[in-house]
Length: 86
Image 1 (cartoon, rainbow, N blue to C red):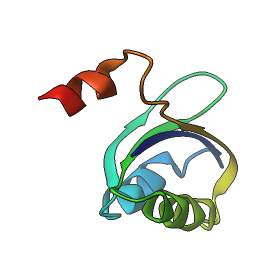
Image 2 (cartoon, helix red, strand yellow):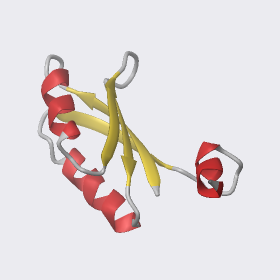
Image 3 (tube, rainbow, N blue to C red):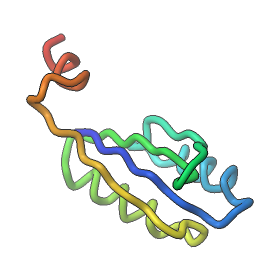
Image 4 (tube, rainbow, N blue to C red):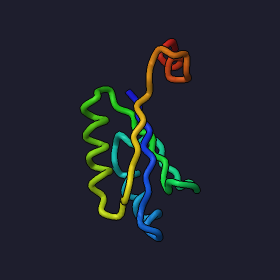
């Protein structure tokens, strides 16, 4: 299972938060971004519970001010579907 999380944070804490996010085993990608959100996070876990626990851990970081989570939908022909074929 995969999910994407967009985060807003207190200005100036981006590098600290990114470093903390990289230490979470289910976080497979994290990048600073410009726009409405400050950080992009890709999560991967074999179980939904793993995704949920990771999101809880991310949202507990004090300098994060807002988040949006998007779960991947399988079966629509996207790139995750192609990975399942291989």
